[in-house]
Length: 114
Image (cartoon, rainbow, N blue to C red; front, side):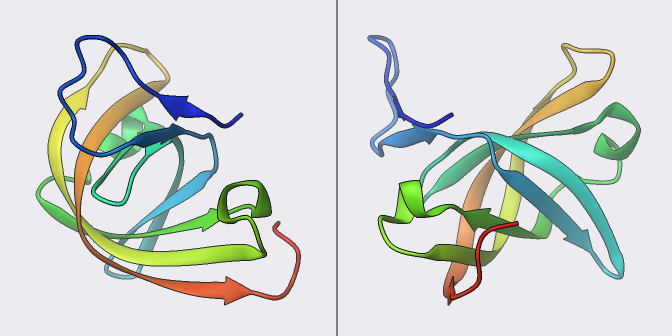
């Protein structure tokens, strides 16, 4: 599921892409899996299990793998650092987390996306 996310009342300066791909939060030695709702070069909205959402607050490291449909070439693995802006607990199963992307680096993956 991909596509540009825009709305009449949206004041964001960057284009966001509505994409659901695996998103991994890395806190020390612990890796917590989740998935994205939308993504831009400056921010991400992602979901974690409610039980894991309390582990993250403030800055965190992350990994996300973008498929060829988004990169228009090969898979791309992104490593980055983010900062939580807000957490939404609207579901019993998942917590939504809006985060600012502070920095990131990309690595093209010659192998197929998992």
